Length: 181
Image (cartoon, rainbow, N blue to C red):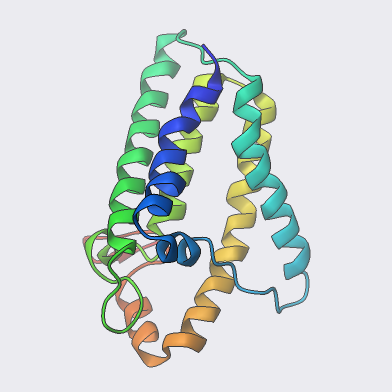
């Protein structure tokens, strides 16, 4: 079975649904700030290449159902990623009066869409059992951090003290039981 099938739910939740419901939502979700710091342009280019690779490479791979000790955890990661993405896009479509998302899943993560990608594509890597896909995934995860830092800088410029307070309460990736990551 083609790994391309793994992308269909992602495309529906992340791009097609928002496009059909609210084009402004799609535009906001696709916003990337301009690189400003030294080396950021190179990291952004690598992020774009890794993003293209992570969306295209599965079409040249197959889903492996065995060994089962890899397939079921992979399917679980993939499912968690889809669930997180659905919750993230739902909350993202309803920013607070301050102009940015702080409700729903955004109470636990400042970047739940990216977090959902890590789960979803991690599951895809395990299901396809491809070392090339794993390399693309590692590059994607590594360069995503640079994009997140730039987005947070942009949010501080746009939303000021309100965003700073939010950032003090909620972890960049995850906040559970008072601990932040």
